[in-house]
Length: 433
Image (cartoon, rainbow, N blue to C red; front, side, top):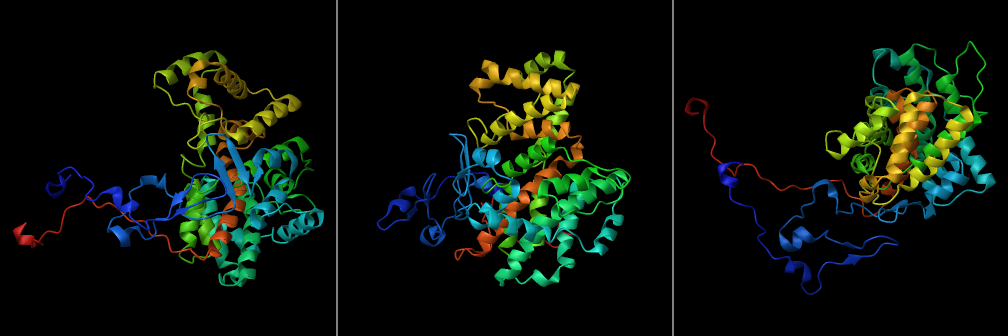
């Protein structure tokens, strides 16, 4: 710290300013904590609030997703995510997040058909991939490719036009699976596979990923259903880092393709969307089932990090993990997969649910632990894990973006800071320094 700032920083004014007559309003939500409306705080007090990471700051009003971390509850538009994952298909949940209610059969079919009408990419987009090295990370291609969509679809970029906004959202939901599969095919040197609109959303993505022209490809319904559940459970998660990034970019008036590309960049971070990749890397470090006890002892002694257990928000069992826990055992049993890495994962899960060390610290397996195992069972490369997450989360991002655009209180995002650099000082010319 500089000489001008070496003295201890102390609050200069009393918090009693908050308690003055006709003080700051308290706003009540449907569920969760109330919030103090501090929009006039600086005007009234001459101070900013200080909240690194915005851990105690509500940046917006939203009617989309609610999390109760203490109870281990996640709601989409008021519906328990576990019930949605067990009873709905991904497109039903996408409709719910976008429009606020679950669709009936007619609306569900119309919505699915609307999405299917946008699955193809402009044929010139194929040339876009040739600019990348074959070993480029698929998320690098996703960031660039999604941002580039605005260069191909100029007929839906008027953000003041509700019809344009909705069309852009449909295009993003429809085209990101196509871009994702093409990124994978490019990395392994196989020809691109076009979408088949007679298939449902998730099955279509699977065939674009894993089929090729030389052979007939049969989609495994067990895997299709498991992946559908993964997409549902990852579709939205309140104002997390990537969603906040989408909203912040959107607050500037940027087009939705640019906003979602920004969200993908945030999701790429290993502390966010890359967590299930980290789970697989951790399992690979454990030397078989016989090495689990040694690894757990190292975790207890802070010599190793335990990935895929616990959660920053959930202080109880991650509700999304409850659903995938059921799926992963069913999948491994039905498919008869023998994979030493998966055997390690299952034994580590058993220990975590039985040992006091894990239970006392509420280190339950989370959604990243189980999704990583399922994707491994599907032979999905680790580099594609975050891409699958990105595909699912696109639905939540566009729902949040639409809500933000319609919010009359929306302002361009502009956080403030607590400046701790040098105070103003005189300029010194070069020869006098």
